Length: 332
Image (tube, rainbow, N blue to C red):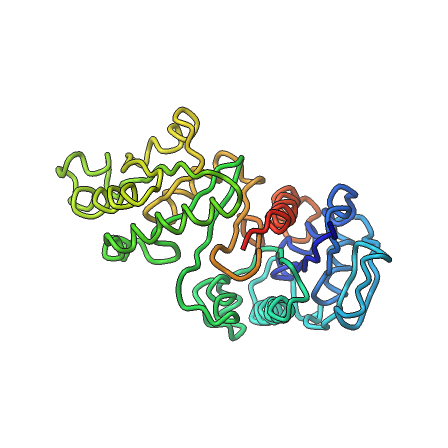
């Protein structure tokens, strides 16, 4: 079987992305898994390598058509998108946001043409993207726009073989309850079931309640009885191994004790706080529901430590490995 061809971007040039890319792409266990195509400004990749204290051994080409897997596993397309003089480590800017968006769109168009099998990128800053002209609430909506998708996609996080997703994601907390409907919960259950199944895993889904103590039989809110439970029951009738709703404060205890491999939260922090507490340097984000495999580290741009040479590349490395694994499993 031929190795997949995977694009790799550093994300926001002002964050830790360039450094962790440089740390990951000197490791033979990573390099041997795919034909990797670095996409971005060569000067930023080199600056990241200087911070990391190493040197990536890549071959530079003008276009992806010049990449020859028989001659090496690491290649670079210099799109000259970012003047390092315009981007200061640890500083949010329109320049770095625009460049991050430009690099991503360039790579996605290669994927649309069938020239990349998957994509992994370092973390991006939503505000920088927005200031740079990419007026989306997050990067997955930017990705979806390139593929002309309006629905059916969502972020999925993976850590320690557990898959995490949510009914609402990047919305203000005050708007969460109004977005919890039977339809949105049921759609999210089916989405989680489909995504995990495509990874070759039989889903067993634990579903969180919205209110404290999962509503306490209606004493602390009606959403569980009126919305979430009917959605779960309908999903069960259609063959989904779905359970709940469970109180959110004990969800992570149930994952291990009751052998759940999938968690569906009602809103962002229900899942993210627990996941990142258990393993901040291990979390991976998959952009689910898209035509190609896309993975990123679950952490942010880490502006506070950018350029200091202390960034941990483990989450990026896990993202790269999972991207290859999913491609090889035929995940779409």
